Amino acid sequence: MKIAVVGGGQLGRMMGLAGIPLGIDFVFCDPAANACAGAAGPVHVGPLDDPASVAAIADGADAITYEWEGVPASTLEPFVHSHFVAPSLRALATSQDRVAEKQLANELGLGTAPWIAVDDRAGLTTAIERVGTPAVLKTRSGGYDGKGQHRILSIDDGDAAWTALGPAGSLVLEGFVAFDRELSVIACRGRDGATVVWPITENHHEHGILRESRVLDDARTQARATAIVTTLLDELDYVGTLCIELFEVAGELLVNEFAPRVHNSGHWSIDGAETSQFENHVRAMLGWPLGRTDPLGAVAMLNCIGALPEPSAALAIGGAHLHDYGKSPRPGRKVGHLTLVAPDENTLQERLVAAREVIAATAR
Image 1 (cartoon, one colour):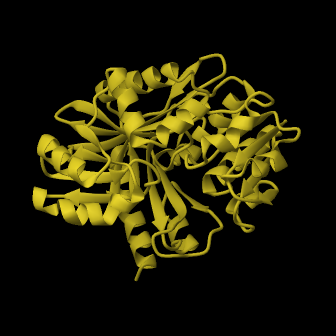
Image 2: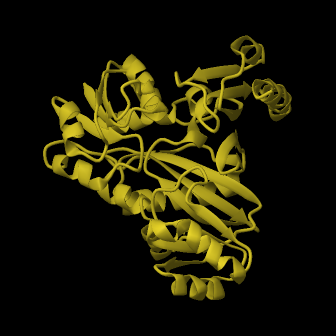
């Protein structure tokens, strides 16, 4: 069996590492010759907006998938009649447009922050007056890890926001959400419609970059998040792993955005769940039964940003699992992560304190 993956970053790498024990071969395409997924299979070097890059890896593939939602749907469209391509191009295209994403959520009865599409400077003024402040002006596409955003605290900030983002083209203004918690829910749907959902995580960001995810044991919130993600999966006739980022506000869950792929906030599942998000994504691509998603204890994941901690120090922490993505150090770059598994929440908290200190020492 062979899976072709468009994109060769750490998500593709971890997908390959999950599938190799199952006897699956992987091939990737990526603009970088030293793409870190090369540890899991050959990499064809080429731009991700060129169907020729996909053609170079598609021969003999039982499925084609992608590890980054920035891949243009037009890159994959020529292959949908000759190969099994998932997640669907509808899911991909919708996730690339914040307006389409919010429209779909609202049509399905899912709550979001108040929002208005913005196409010109006058439209921004109107949007600020209607949505109110504080608010966040965002590009409709292309933003990630806090990029492509500008906060607006008063209507007087409109000029600065437009100067910063207006040249990017179509925008969307979102009302600022004073959330109680940032959460995410990850699920996987098979070719037969069978669906599994991992425990929700509480996420903490700094400067728009995910720093920590902690698995929650919260049955009421889990049930509501599961209802949201299964609604979207079924609407999109989705196959594969999907993540929805949520805001919890006074007990209500609002959809922030969704990613039609394996997701950073689910990396804990490699060491902390019966079946990881990566293995189930691979299983779904091939039409195989999905594995259980039960946690193996109290679990948390910490991203390593910029540089990896000293392995001997990190692995001295009980229940620690270090993942090195094989990427060169660089400020703001995700170069690895550390998963902590513990028998109970108190022990996990103790291990988190130690892990934070080890990671902080890297930046000194």
